[in-house]
Figure 1 (cartoon, each protein chain N blue to C red):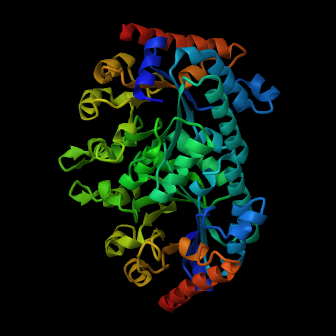
Figure 2 (spheres, chains in turn blue, cyan):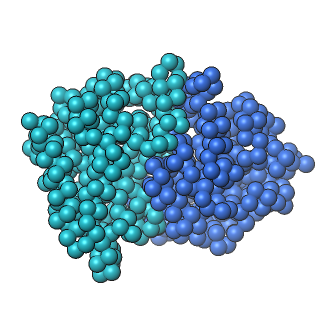
Figure 3 (tube, each protein chain N blue to C red):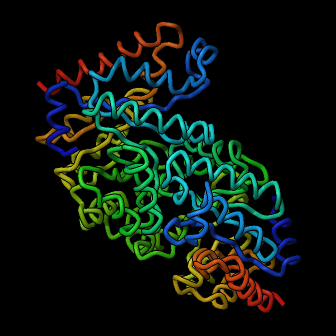
Length: 271
Length: 271
């Protein structure tokens, strides 16, 4: 998928919403848990089927599948194949936060770009260049580098000043020197919207994946006004706000309503 | 497993060797690939059976399993359960480089400490405190934080000076303030042996996991003399040097010989 393809989808759907799938067995409606042989799959599938036309991307949090061991990992494979087969225009993200020495990162790239058909994967930058570049050798695929995350612990290191600038800025600037840097996107938490203008100046063309709108308190308007570029360049993620809008038998309708509300706000911002 | 248990094993086996399992289908002896239904499992099992008495730890690189999708992940589960059942005294490491916001790190902890019976997992520090602490809530389990890695890309960020010290030092010092910090260990590349004395001064009691001896050029003597504490406090990893000592039908004997050579050097250093 190219930047242009993604921009086309944004224009078509009047949305830059990313649906985050963090399926938590303790929050999935009990009638699914009781009746289904694979409740996580059935729950995620039902939500995706219902809201796919309102979003341009789907982000699957691998931890919520790995927590169930081999069974969970098998569900992950089944789910990404279902999504890719039925909704090939959705940009898919493995939110996996991987990254290791070169020959190992190469295996993670194989895992998510070959063994599973994801379009992109989130990557931790700590190990530098040779831990990131293996993911950038795939045409039409993207590595989404952690820059400034939405959590409290972000303050531990990401704001530390190195060479007169905070570490997250250094991560952004350094990553632009990597081979095939045009295949990079970046994670920037919505709770850090004040920093978006500055970040956009460093990476003017890249798509930014923005978690933290809704449950974590970030504002969609602030994100758009500070972060959009001429291709929009934003994928704003919502997970819990959509998935757990209701825990009753009306969970699909409630998810639709929550996603439609976000898409409605996005449509307004885009016009 | 406690620090004391690990130290007891080191004294008993006269070894602080960690066997690294990075099974690469292109390097596994062809007679296994041709004959076995699960060559990665059979290869790893044969090596572990042969050298387990020479090492105190086994580090499994999850990427080399995930590269084969659901099948690979199932092999990972089968392998760690085999090792834990047959060799309960071996300290097991999921070399998985995970780390995410708190509720997600909690799922990775469940994945590797509950769904699979690992004793420890390697963690990337970029997202800070709440991305690490969920792993530290398990008694007898450890999070092994990346400090100074053995690869070239380590120079990108880990040596950047923040608050008058390099980032990796800041990672070490900051991590000591985390809750249950006594359940932390650290990754320090053997290629960075010059820094070990200084690192040991910051984290005097912690075990250090040291990759990079052998193939990557680090020296065992330098590592020991600069990094050992009164509980030894070192797990020196060898992967390729043992696994691929021979690609012929004598691969088990060759692996034994390579592991025994390292253990022999360790025995000398320990006496």
